[in-house]
Length: 322
Ligand SMILES: CC(C)(COP(=O)(O)OP(=O)(O)OC[C@H]1O[C@@H](n2cnc3c(N)ncnc32)[C@H](O)[C@@H]1OP(=O)(O)O)[C@@H](O)C(=O)NCCC(=O)NCCS
Image (tube, rainbow, N blue to C red; front, side, top):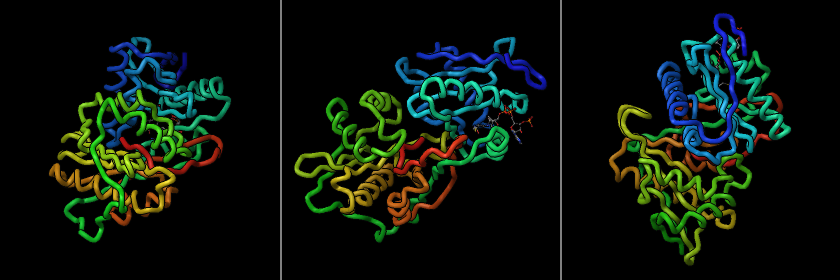
């Protein structure tokens, strides 16, 4: 039991899949925070993992004596990272600090290392909270935006000679894609770990469209891919918004212009769907990716920061988005 200024909350830790009622309470809490803060507090992976019995995560819930869910944290015990949210109507009562303390304890027990926490939108409350709880910024993830109407022919990049493009085939291409993705993102903490089951979970999402998931091959061998996504109206913006979700090039094929060509092809696909705006997420220190997107006309729209109590190495690599 944690005693705050105005309220007492109980923090409970569980593993495995939360029951449907608990999962829907977490989604409701995240939606209320999104509404008030203007930024979603939980990204795609933790939301998907609410329905995943085998995910390597600990769910931490903060409930009032009446059982109301007022805070939630999800700890990924493989990457020692967490996302954390407190209901806007229940903030500044010590719930965030109590969840953070519990997350730190679980991470130390499971991994023996310090905890890293994502703060989406780099909000003032998260910054102040971080300062009070001894967290510092160790990684910066930028959200970039492109107005497709401003795109010029000069930014289009052709495929390197001998490379062909085709749509992903569900049930056939998962393992080849996973292998190239793991090689392309070998140093990336989340992206490089994606499994075939993670790909299949995304195939079951309503946004999944194999026509927007393009594989580049050379002599029949996969060398890179661009995976796009369309956010329906009312999620990212009033209008539907496209996303360059993942671009990955096998290390053996890097430096040949394939990354730029794949990004161009992804943008062509999203333009063909009649979208006006495209977003993507990239690590600020991934110079090659930042330059690629800069050349396509992307500009910075927002920043997410990763906070940690120590300064473990800040990783590089482009990244999977929202
Ligand atoms: C950040 C967040 C989790 C804090 O939750 P909380 O329950 O309000 O946090 P606590 O009550 O435990 O606050 C601990 C201390 O952090 C600081 N703090 C928290 N919010 C603050 C704010 N809006 N302004 C100034 N200081 C703040 C204060 O020093 C506070 O202690 P105090 O209230 O005794 O002064 C909550 O605002 C939230 O869910 N934000 C959206 C999601 C997010 O950004 N998550 C990432 C967290 S790193």
